[in-house]
Image 1 (spheres, rainbow, N blue to C red):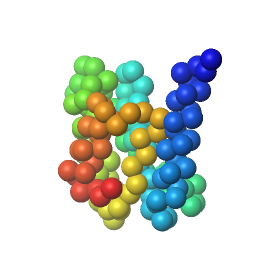
Image 2: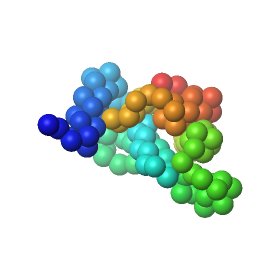
Image 3: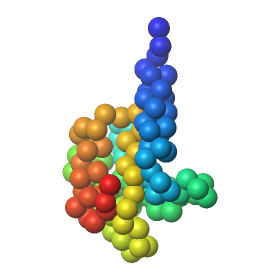
Image 4: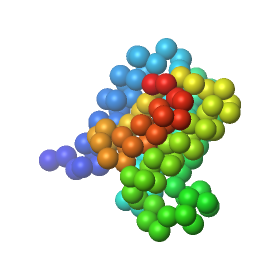
Length: 120
C-alpha cells in the first residue's frame, strides 16, 4: 500500500514530465502549498535558478491577514507574482501545479496570476 506522500510525488513527477514536453523553454510557475501558507516561484529550468518568488510569508501579507492559508491570500500571492514578473519582462510561463489538484487555493493563485498579466 502506497502512502499519500508517495502518491503525491508520483503525481508531481508525472505533471512535470508532461510540462517538460510542452514547455519549449518557457519559465515555470511552480506552486507549493502547506496548511498554513502558499508559495509561488517562477523557475528557469535551463539555468536551474529561481527568477521570482512570492509567498504568504511576506511581511506585509502576514500582517494584513490573520490566517494565511485561505483562498484570498492565494489570490494576493498570485497578483504579487504577476506584478514582479511583468516588472522583469516575463509574460509567458508554464503553470506547474505540482501534485496538487487544480482546485481551491492553487486555482485562485493561477487565476490571479492570469488576471495580473501572465499567460499560461
